[in-house]
Length: 285
Ligand SMILES: Cc1cc2nc3c(=O)[nH]c(=O)nc-3n(C[C@H](O)[C@H](O)[C@H](O)COP(=O)(O)OP(=O)(O)OC[C@H]3O[C@@H](n4cnc5c(N)ncnc54)[C@H](O)[C@@H]3O)c2cc1C
Image (cartoon, rainbow, N blue to C red; front, side):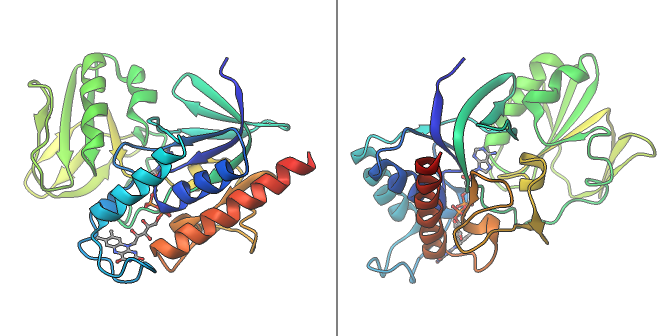
């Protein structure tokens, strides 16, 4: 069993990094989950004109500055994707496949997915459509799986799934050439619909159809409602008060996942507020 952290921060974009820095300043034992690139939305920004004090910076340059900052404070990013978070009373359990991390408080900083769900995606969720390929791949032993990958990270999951199932089709939703195991079939075509009556039967593309038993839709972030069962939402965003409290005591949220405007400085400010209020929450326990 892993040790129990004071605060687990889920997401390594500006909101999560700011929460980590501020919680560390307050001497809390933290764990920060995310990816090596920090945030796709950060590294993709061509020119940032509205980050106070850094009037003419690219997303990559800002990422470097963030990286130097967290390194100088000995903050590491744990390269894991949290699949589900449960409130267990005195603590939270953060699930990564079969593994569980424990923390007394949580800051959700998972960002938001700009793309709309595909036709059939929400209707067939849990009926052959899933968001965590590594969790559910064993269910498809001897079967056909299609992976719709929205980012390069999905390729790693596709290669893993490929070891367990009969056949993998991979549909990239981005321009770069996917780097995949040889026997994965790459399908470069526009997805029109995930189709099935009771369960997934096929993926309908502009130029062809793929018969498939399962579809994994792998995006930057999944809906917080999926991630934290019972969390209150307001349209697509986590509902928070001015202290970044969600409806679940000890669970805070910050950044794009709590609402517009989708901006770096707002994300950073909310990450700070969330962390400081998580610290107060812990101090009262
Ligand atoms: C091309 C582009 C240009 C932009 N330009 C500007 C600009 O000039 N100025 C400006 O202010 N804003 C700009 N933005 C908006 C800005 O990028 C976002 O507002 C900001 O990144 C939000 O930060 P965040 O921390 O809330 O989320 P994100 O930056 O989206 O970070 C969330 C991170 O959490 C990770 N994550 C999600 N779920 C999990 C999980 N379950 N487990 C582990 N990790 C998880 C994600 O992979 C991601 O790395 C731009 C956005 C884009 C796409």
